[in-house]
Image (tube, rainbow, N blue to C red):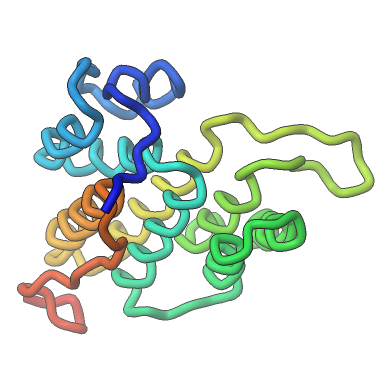
Length: 194
């Protein structure tokens, strides 16, 4: 099993995406990226941000989809389905479909951000008949972290911390070459109550 990390140090993540420093107060180090992620696991929101930047775009979106599905009780809407379709078949048609859905949906819904993440993974973010404009390099990571954090924030308050830990654990495991499946916290029932 090989890991999915494309950086050799945590500092390289911060150098590749200077915007990450706005969300992570912990200073980057020259330690391996997954060691840094494990250290951030104690600062869970920072870990979510870091994992979204650490993973390649397609993998970050898949991890985000797994988190949103798990926290939301596996409900899928057209935005989540569009993001998953792009992950399964990352071509211009599925990317553009996800982008179109993402631009038209409610920004207070986590899956909207996943559609935007897929839509801003490359190509142009302007309408097809307009002058092409590339998305900013950090767009996918920013959208994925927004989706994961928003999904957790919309969970019942007593289960949020456990869901946050579960998503971080899944992200680190996925970055390390394992699966991205988010294990429901044992203390949180289907209703979200302990």
